[in-house]
Length: 618
Ligand code: ADP
Ligand code: MG
Picture 1 (cartoon, rainbow, N blue to C red):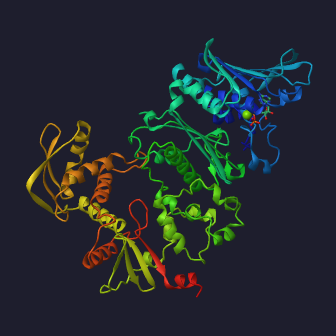
Picture 2 (picture 1 turned 45 degrees about the vertical axis):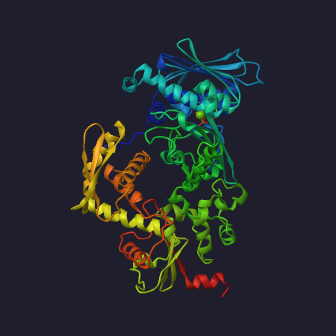
Picture 3 (picture 1 turned 30 degrees about the horizontal axis):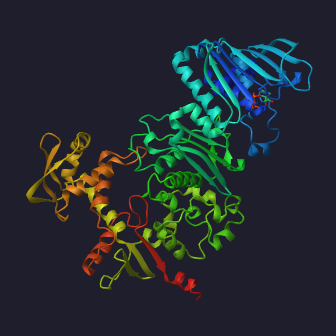
């Protein structure tokens, strides 16, 4: 038997590799524009014909290449941007993999003209199927002009996969705009089939955004700007009324590199919660800059996906920065500053700067560079009580989680703040003990090891949520028929929505029937609910239902149950009797997850004697 393993010829290897980097004309556009940026060009011109299928040409006035480099640049893994492993962690250029030109040369006919400032004449090179077919000196200006013709001419299968010209053009425009937005200090032009598509004079970011999106946006942009020692965020978000029904103008850059991140997109979207309808998308152009060591851009061939050393922190910063910006521009005076509950609970976010933490974190490069003054998320509001409680509670001995540990345990992080006993064994509470209600909001509950401080509204929300969730699964809840049925009149949209919810609402103890013309009759309400403001409860429930973020993939039923639990829960500020308090505590600890609300906030905090002793220096 002959041996069967061959080494692929370079041209074939390059063609295979090209499949990853150059998927369509737009990918080549991106790579060529980025090379021009990396070459320090001040002016970059893009020309395409036939949506890039016939020609893509990028001309820049950057550094140019020497004769040798002009030939070298088409070799695979040929790059001037990194030379050793360590460089991978300090990348400041757009490119570094040394694959783009090799890939392009494998799948198109390429002509390169390039000249350095110090050279008399430049170099002209023609390449086909990765083979140099012509090389000669040429008279040209400083910089580089690279033209690729007949993309995929040698790979008909790939060529046939290309979409219509209109579709490919859209991709090209997307890539062009991403680079143009990231570098407003550079001039860009874009010509397609001899017609000018964009002519972008250099200017500020705001000018660039307006050049691209249109003048009508001048007064519609809110500046985002937060600097911290760990990362900076700057850019613009659209005022809520610019939100569109289609996800369009949303740009996120990390160290000037456009990236796609559903996670960080969610951070921005969540900052708009309750400001825009849940099915619309705000405009944003945001730049996150941080130490290149904190990101890995080498996880994806086209570098559009990156990995953060600590994604949760970035999420929290982005969300807080956008909220802050929107609030500062008094778009919403009632804006709730709380960070996303799950994030807020993270020690790193909720309190990275107690003295103990500072010491404990000193060894971690990630945290050691924070400074309190500059924390974007450190926004003081009257809603920050919770954080103070936690700080107060925080035992001195608690080990600081390393970033890695946090990534591996994304579970509601505040669990770690609470004693593990409640997760593992049922709570032993003295049922005869007198409970104390504080501020008509908190209930102080003695526990064997110390005491609990329970938030009555949070606790009741949890109780109702679990009760409703099981009711819709099973036989439903008892109805209390109203002596005087009420009519509810809704808008056409709300009525349509409401109609879809009636079956589930009936399971939840509401007896409701459509009455034509967007009217409904409420004939009964859940037996355990005080009657009197049914209408208002239903209207608020609908409102809350509508405002669930589209990113939360809840079923209709889940949204309904959550909204209803929120609406029906007894409120903070309500005075409770001993009996009511005992009932609440008892029901809470019968829940499957007694320690958190549905949104991840704690329902109670535990204070233990030994921790209290420590705080008192005993
Ligand atoms: P990478 O950008 O990852 O280094 P490329 O294949 O895109 O890899 O380019 C290879 C090399 O060719 C670059 O590192 C750079 O030195 C050189 N080069 C490419 N385009 C240009 C340009 N427009 N001007 C000057 N040098 C360039
Ligand atoms: Mg490159």
